[in-house]
Amino acid sequence: MIIAIIIVFVLILLVFIQYNQLAKLKLRVEQSKSGIDVYLQQRFDLIPNLVNTVKGYIDYEKETFENITKLRNQYNETKNIKISEELNNQINQIVAVAENYPELKASEQFLNLQRNLSKIESQLQAARRIFNNDVTKYNTKINIVPYNIIAILFGFNEESLFQINDETKNNISVDL
Image (cartoon, rainbow, N blue to C red; front, side):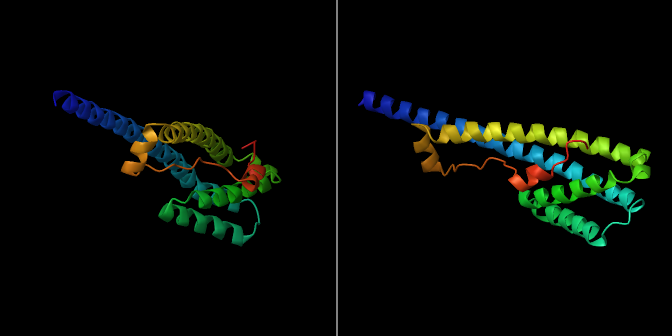
């Protein structure tokens, strides 16, 4: 009888330990995702300044500026990664067009915005790597025995890796 109680106690203890490990990994994934959101927000906070600076120098399609504003507002409301990718494409188009305007390229305000945007892009890229690393660790853990049993029992589901689609990769400007 005592042996049975000890075995049950050990099994319950193992379940608690495994549950806590999965919960810690899940929290790291959420924290990493939050880090991406912080850098995306910083980047999006630069957008009005970038748009206004570029507007002052080039006669560009009004529709593009309106689309950027609309996408920025949509992202702030939904925090949808797909919207951030679309917005990234629009920003890169503005920066690419601005390269054709020497007086804009020489503008101190524009150069400062480019530097800030480049810095934030680097930080965002690092945050994405951290997120994907944490997601991989978490997904690996919930797919191996005995953690997969605990994951099923307590509703731990796989997370998706952060991926940029091919269209976004092709539109990203290296020389921000």
